[in-house]
Image 1 (cartoon, rainbow, N blue to C red):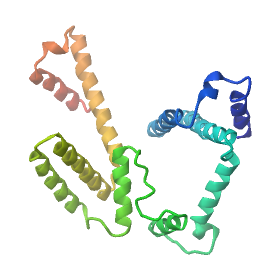
Image 2: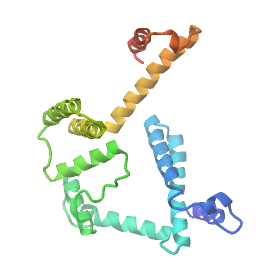
Image 3: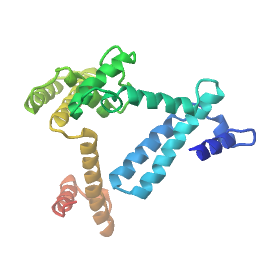
Image 4: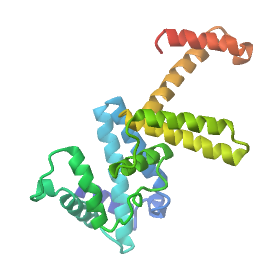
Length: 248
């Protein structure tokens, strides 16, 4: 870690990199997000070499932000490490103290109490509004479920989704369409959660499947020396079903 800190200090120093010295917390946000997604991609691919590299890239963003904050007189990397270390100790009294928590559910039930002690007053206050919408809806539902505000099973959520579909059909303008579409997505996230399905992963699997099948269709068209405009929708659908039959 010290080596990386020294590299960062050199980059931001008098004879350092002009690009690095121009950066701010705000300008680095996109890179923080991009690097996080690349870590997720490495995990998804089960590529440990790539994961090692991407974790390093993500760690660089943490060190970069801490270095900028230190130069502005706000906090240091040591402060960041001390804060998270103490937070983990405080939130795990069953490990570092005498509290007896036997299951992960016991831990999560206590977790919200620990956060309130840290000054987070309302249950949903600490869920950032700039999280990806699907992930945010899942987090909101998980939080509400912790205090009993939840469907008894997935069937109630499915009925709610059907209700939202009917309301979408009755929408009269763009504002209503947007609202009802959002309600359908929110209900789908609920159905996924109650079936122990990670909705983001499920949607990504469908995205990947669409890419595989579409690539098959496109490659077939290319191999025939043709173009998409040479095919009707029925013709494209036939190729799509070929891809599906091949298990793509």
